[in-house]
Image 1 (cartoon, rainbow, N blue to C red):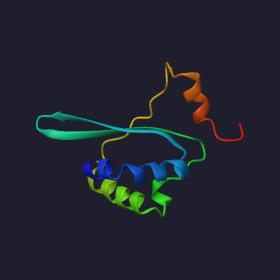
Image 2: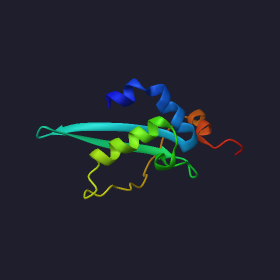
Image 3: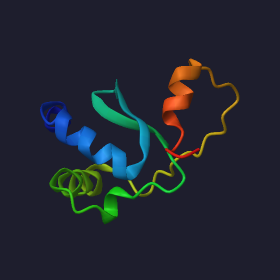
Length: 97
């Protein structure tokens, strides 16, 4: 996480081609173990970080491969309520809509 925090300008460079509107990493410590949780909101045609040539994404993918537990399934959550200012929603629409 220190790497991502130290390279936030580079992180922001990767968000546009990925059409990543929100990427947040949460953590909690349970019984002395640090667990990380990713929450992302991505546009429909966003590029996957796995296919990116950006140096930061390459580093990020290596980190994911080291820390993600493939046995523990991810959750695909269903939105029940969404609230944000209209100006934020407008900014999240792809250009040309």
